Image (cartoon, rainbow, N blue to C red):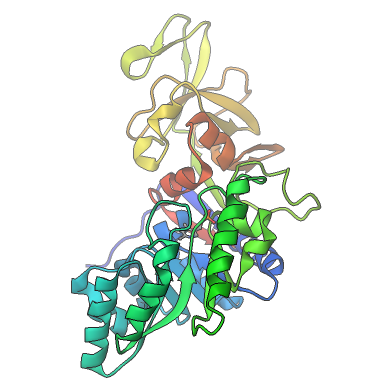
Length: 377
Ligand SMILES: *Cc1c(COP(=O)(O)O)cnc(C)c1O
C-alpha cells in the first residue's frame, strides 16, 4: 500500500540559505580549523540527515551525534564525512562502529579494550577521540589521568588515539574566567605532550567559537550557532559588526476557527483565563504535542496579521486559543507564525524560550522534532 502524504496544519520550515550562511560565517571565524557540525538531536530539530547533506554540499566534513544509532542513520543517509559519536557506545554495538566507519569519543579504558579486541578480530584499526573533563563535570577522564590513559592505550592494538576533546560549561558567558582557566588546563595538556601522535584537539562549542577565539585549537564544534542562535540568547551584543547569525527554523500554522466570546467567560481546561470584555478568540491547531509547551499557557504570543496575539487559557494537547480582539479581519485559514517573522513583527526562539524559562536549544528541539519539516531555499 502506498503511503498517502497529507500535510499537517503545522509546518516547521527550514531555510537552507540561513543554514549555509551561518556555516560560512562560523567557518570564517574558525579560520583554518575544521568546523564540526553538531547534528545530534536531529540537528537540534532541523533534521539530521537533511542538515548534514546540505552542509556536506558546501564542504563540511565533520559531524557530531550523541549515539551510535544516530551515526548509523547518518551514514545510511549517504554522508561520507567523519561521524563522531559523543556518548561512546554500548559493547553490543561495537561492530557497528567498524561497519559504518564511525569515530567513538571514549572516556574509559574498558571501551578501548572492547574496541581493540574487535579491531584485532577484523584486522583493522579504529580511530578514537578521548574525552577529558577539564571542568564540565560530565563525561571524561580527569586531566591528571591523561598520561596513564594514553600509555595504556598504546598497549591496545588496533586503537589509534586521533583526538582529545573537552567541553566548556560556561563559554556562553562572554566574560567567564572559568572558560579561560579551563582552556589553560586543556592547552597545558596539549603542550605537555608535544611528541604525541594525538592530532586533533578540540574543545570549542558555539560559545567558544563566538566569544573565546583562543579556544579554537584544531577543530571547533558548532551546534546552536549553526542554527542561528547565540548560546547566551543575546543576539545583538556579540558580533558587533554585522553580519549576524540567521535563525534557520520557523514554525507556522493556520487559524481553525474564530469566535466572539462575551465578557466573563472562561477559556480552555480549568478556565485559567476569563475574558475581561467581549473578545475575539482564534483557535489554533497547535498544542503541547506539537512542542508548544504547556508552560506557555496565558504567557506566550503568536503572530497573526503581522501582529502579536496572546495565548489565552491552558494549551491543550492539539489546540490552543489566542486573543485577536485587537487584530482586524482575522479569519479561519489565516496564517499564524509561532516562531519566525510575519510582516514587520518577529518572535525569536530566544523570546519563546524566555517565556518558558528555558533556552533556544530546547525550543528548537520541541518544535522541530514534533512537527513536519519542510526545506526551502
Ligand atoms: C552539543 C555539544 C556541542 C555544541 O554545543 P553548542 O552550544 O550547541 O554549540 C559541542 N560539543 C559537545 C560535546 C556537545 O555535546
